[in-house]
Amino acid sequence: MDIRYSANQRDVKRYTTQELRDEFLIQNLYAANEVVAVYSHVDRMVTLGCMPTTETVSIDKGIDCWKNFGTHYFLERREIGIFNIGGSGRIVADGQEFQMGYKDCLYITKGTKEVYFSSDDASAPAKFYMVSAPAHTSYTTTYIPIAKAAKRPCGASETANKRVINQFIHPDVLKTCQLSMGMTVLEEGSVWNTMPSHTHERRMEVYMYFEVPGDNVVFHMMGEPTETRHIVMKNEEAVISPSWSIHSGAGTSNYTFIWAMGGENMEFDDMDTMMPNQMK
Image: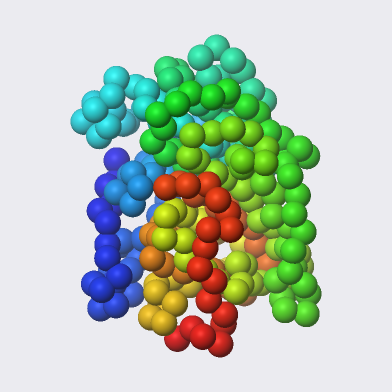
């Protein structure tokens, strides 16, 4: 497991491009029949990827739960949100089987002992993207297909940010301990997300960009609002955003991203907005 320790905003001002990438960028999430995991000490969030091809893969594969979490199994004191961004596949959680199509989501509650991933077709494998947060209460494992996500259109083509926010693991959709996740889809011709930008002191966030076509990239904006930095990101890469950092981006094409939040509260209006002309 790759472990990332917390970075403060004073030191980040002096980071080189490579240091920024080493600290916040998450790459190479998908390896055949493996679980790739990155543990961030920012709110103790774990970002994972699993691409089963010829095997059924356990969520614990390659993870020393006792060493990293002091638990006997991964979800003993955690909850997790899972999206499929690849071919069709299946998840079995403590004997419950869920068929996962493209962009479908599954929330699995704290206390689930066994989670297994498989693909329907090894030549077109599922790609399970996951974010896990610590949890102190168990709720209900819930499958949310893309068709049943709460859809919130926003933005405009005139400002190049016309998009639909799909809320999956969200207080308006289902009850969780602290984890929130959703998917934002930008329309053709729109490239900006989350603008005007903001910070939220009581929550961190992880972004994962996908459907970035061909040789296109996303310029992910981060840093304090008056000390901005950027990370150039490719398809299916994720980025850690601490509470003190803005999180916004502009692509060389339209794209889709999955956002995940965890922290002190789940109030989505609890944020400090910074208008573009105030940023530096």
